[in-house]
Amino acid sequence: MYQLLFIDGDNQHVVGLFETVEDVKSWIAQIPFITTYESEMEFTIAYADIPDYTEIEWQGSIYPLTRHSFTGDHEIVVEWEYVPIIKAHQGMVPGTTLVEGYVYDNPSVKQYIEQRSLFKDELKQYFEAQGKKVSIGGLGSEDGEYINVEDGPFIHIDPSNVENWLHEGSIEAFLKSYE
Image 1 (cartoon, rainbow, N blue to C red):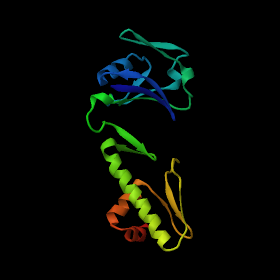
Image 2 (image 1 turned 120 degrees about the vertical axis):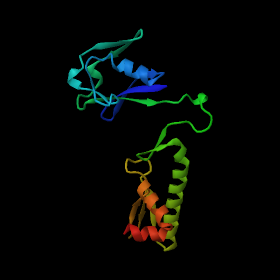
Image 3 (image 1 turned 45 degrees about the vertical axis):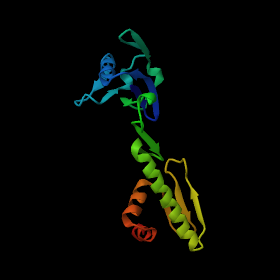
Image 4 (image 1 turned 60 degrees about the vertical axis):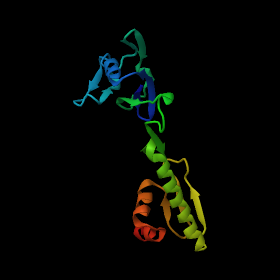
């Protein structure tokens, strides 16, 4: 299934579910004021072009569309995303998972979480072994989790630092390259 969305800045409006990408494109084609880019995979709607009220009719369904659903601050981006039907899949469900502002393919999430946890734990242990006070914060924030060392560095637990740590092979080598 494919979920069709209208994206207005930080706001998402769910239009509905479609069985195929072709159905999504067929529905989108019913919007007379849509802008289609050359790739035919990118669609936008100018806020000024949306009437006070209109109805998008497609295969017997009617979707109400009104300019009053949007802020008027942005061009509305029309996107769709694959939504797996859980019982139809064995093993890892296809798709992506958001981890602190970064999107990972589902099969990669477990490995990344294990790596970032080990990185964080080793950093904390390294500085505590030196008698330094370590605080961890930022979980759930836009910038993500971090380690703050008293009289020392402030280190984000983000993909680039995890990757650098893995590349360097040790906390000591990572910290040397971090300076």
